[in-house]
Each structure stands twice: as structure tokens, then as C-alpha cells.
Amino acid sequence: MDYSEVIDFVKRTTSENGRPNEYPFRNVFEHTMRVYRWAIRLQSKLGGDLDVIVLASLLHDVGWEEGRPKEEVSAEVAVEYLDSIGVDPETIVKVGEIIMAQSDKETERDLSLECRIVMDADLLDEIGSVGIMLDCMATALEDEASYKRAYYRIKNNYRLNKPKIRSCKTEAARSEYTKRMQAIENFIYQLEREIF
Image (cartoon, rainbow, N blue to C red; front, side):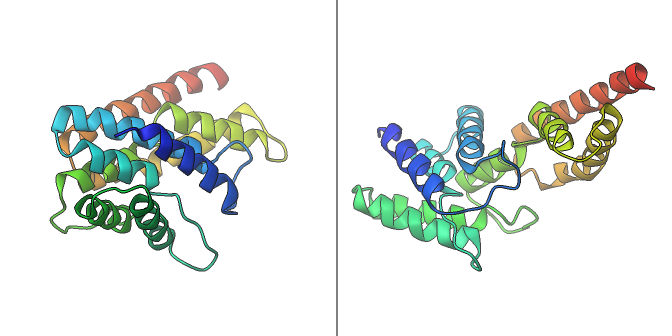
């Protein structure tokens, strides 16, 4: 399957659907592309139906409507789009189910491998170096921005994100999550030595 059409659809749809961005430097399309790349990496280690994984990762955040759960709207948009381009019904059902489930990271339900991979790819985004960049850029937009304020924000988000490793559904994602948390810990340690 040629994923470039789907990528173009996601880029166009996410730019037009009116979903507000928390920060001017963040956007849903860039997040989606990072999730897509991580989903492919995880699939290469774990297996699973590549088409289902790619389509679900690309379309997992495609929808937005004020007052409705984003996964519900995204699943509706994804199902309609995939049907319009002639994707087989079984794949469409699997993709829709993954999109509906992917935001419930705490679930204990028995999930398909494809669903676990997409959930883990989404969880891995903005953890690690990208998260540090986000914290620094967000701090720079605040009044009285400083290195110390960025440091405290990074340290607080590290503390909040560290327990989320329990939400990883695959060992491959747990391993990557652990590496990223260690990288943040090393960064915090070095930053403390340089600014205090």
C-alpha cells in the first residue's frame, strides 16, 4: 500500500479541522509522523500486520470536533476515509478499533499486537529528547523565562512521566522508555552541575 496518500490526507485534514494547539511550535501532524515512525520501528521488532499498524498510527489523531472524544471522531474520519480509498473492510475494522482504544493507556484488556504497538508508539512520543525540547520551548514562551525555570519544568515532567512506563504494552517499548528516562536523568544531572 502507498502510504504517501494517507500521509497527505492526514496533513491536510489535521491542518483544517480546527484542533487548537497548546503551543505554537506543536502540531498534530508532526506528532503523528513521530508516532508513525516509532510504530514502524516497533513492528520491525515485534511483527504484526504492517498495514494495520501504519494506518492506525497515521490516522489515530486525524479527527477533531469540540465537545467529542478525539478518538471517536478520529475513528469515524479514518473509517470513512479508508472506505473511500478501497481498503478492505477487515483492515478498516481493525484500524477503527485501535484508534478507539489507543488513548486508554491504563487498560488491562487483552489487546491485539497491532493495538499494543500503536499505543506504545503514541506513548513514546514527547518522552526523552523531544520532551526536553518541548519543556525548554514552552518555558521560553512564559514570562520571566530562564534556564532554572526550564530545569524545574524538565525535572517535574521527568517525575510525572517516570511511572508511565507501566503503561507500555510491549517489552520493546519498555526498553526504549527506560533508555529515554535514563537520558533525561543524565541531562538533569548535567544541567544541575552547570547552572547551580
